[in-house]
Length: 341
Image (cartoon, rainbow, N blue to C red; front, side, top):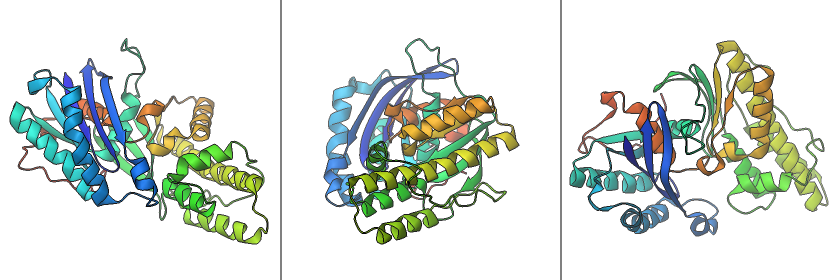
């Protein structure tokens, strides 16, 4: 089976060709055109600008990457939400057009579900990579989402915890602004933290004493703000120490909550997914703690941590087993607030 996948939920225009067989998927082609430089001057993504950039890029990308007629394509998959409404619409309308032209089936994919399936993408060309086993415990952590998902099987997801305020990625971005770091803030914090002492400042770890699996990062963010106000001379080393200490607090909460949930629910796999999964400290801690409880940890390749179409194609392959997941082009409308369950 070969799938063309389209992703335009935010500020990346992405296309991918995915091949699936015998319960595994691998990437034949994946192209991502980022708009980071375009939006950096605004300090964040402007939806209308993002949509215009998607429209300018997507058809030239299709013409360059695909053979005419779509003969090799079995399914067209597209991100249907959540995301920025104008941006989502560009991808959805493009997918509809291709489906009408090529007479192919259309499979809409939840962007968050796509992030989950980034862990299933084969890491080599020989179809030999291990894949997660169900039931799986998933930490989905990105710019706008921090959620713990219990996956019973393909497409059968149960949300068992989420942030009560800021997502972890939002906290990274807001603390980056406090430290006068450029957009996007997450990678900037992670890079600066390499030069800091994570023990220099003790920041709060919210809700660790609670039985539930929810998160809260607003208090941590406020603590960083008050700490900065108390320091008279904020030099490069102080900034690095704050970045490292803040990052350590976030990682500590994410890992400890996830490991506790995995043990209680007897998960056979742990999956770390979403843009923040690119953080090397977070990845390292998960792998270490997973070994301690003897549960395998699956983390996407760095190239598939951020928004990309390969993950959308991977999700479509596994979800295609249920014919109810296919829709008519007339029925498909993007949903910027689409939830995972």
